[in-house]
Image (cartoon, rainbow, N blue to C red; front, side, top):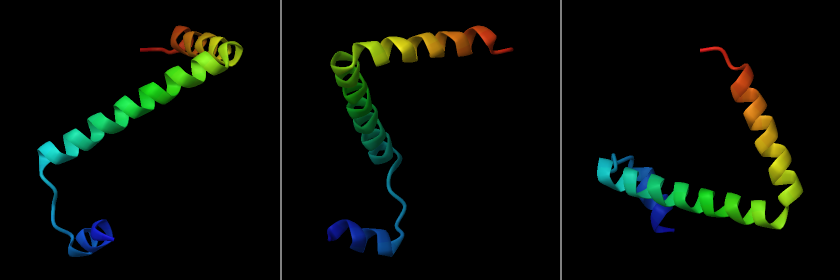
Amino acid sequence: MAQSEAAGEEQPESDAERRRRRAQFLRELNEAKALRDRVQPRRARAARMRQQMRMRTFRW
């Protein structure tokens, strides 16, 4: 409820706070990806192969 009140005020958050929240989000995202890769190794391998193919065909 406090977040909805703060959002209503439209006060700009500090740059450091934004970076801290972004870093936390990226940590959690990488952790979730690692967990998914362990749980579904075949799908993870296929995704890696697709990513490699995309990088090979990408034109700089």
